[in-house]
Image 1 (cartoon, helix red, strand yellow):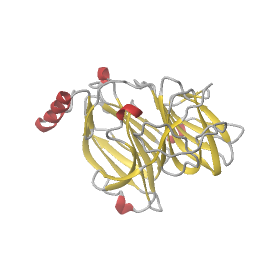
Image 2 (cartoon, one colour):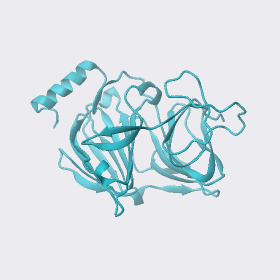
Image 3 (tube, helix red, strand yellow):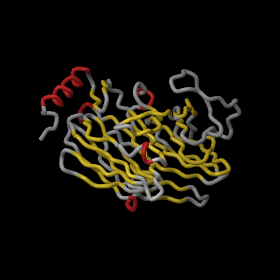
Image 4 (cartoon, helix red, strand yellow):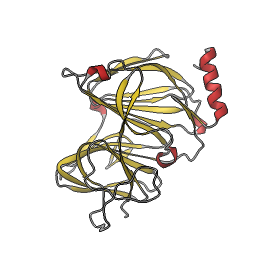
Length: 300
């Protein structure tokens, strides 16, 4: 067994999307090689409704999958295929945009005005870029949770883990999407297949993803550096990108730590990306936007 080293750590950065939603972007445009098959991760967390209430009005997607995970508040959604509904706390929506869809997402806070959730974009392989769109809406109660004797808890949204399988299926890159809590002072190792890229995003508490047996000095690197780095006391809104290995090591701090642990097999395909549409070539992008203009974007 080999512990994955921490390649880079960075903090998510403020961004504004949709009709003026203030959020934090963990990674996004221009970092496709390191995170392949994932493209973008946004943390939309706010207690001030004016910063999120305008939401994400009608917009297109093609060539990707969008994964929305709500922790507090709710998100009302609708699309050009006639689907509509509301995601509540703990719910997940895995949308395969495929050949094209228009949809909207409108956040609504809880009784105290709090809104918190994540949106992850996953790329589709060339062979499935123009597949038929589909939704997998998963209520919180259907997401399995495993609790270990030391109090470690893992919600399994997608993929297999510790003998349980998440409810989202049929995803081309065979991703694993976990919501992990490690109690105060507990050390754990978590398996990650060697053929996957993997990252963690911390959203509560703090801890260290550095192997306890590693005596090297701790450093912090921006994503994009060529140097490896280990990270100590990684805290709220921190993104950790792992190197190669088959396990991730974590030591929780005094308040415990909660984080997303996401991994997937890289596609290793060219990426042509403009706004909400991701294809393989600039010509395919130009065609998609031409179809948006002439009204032929939605297929079938």
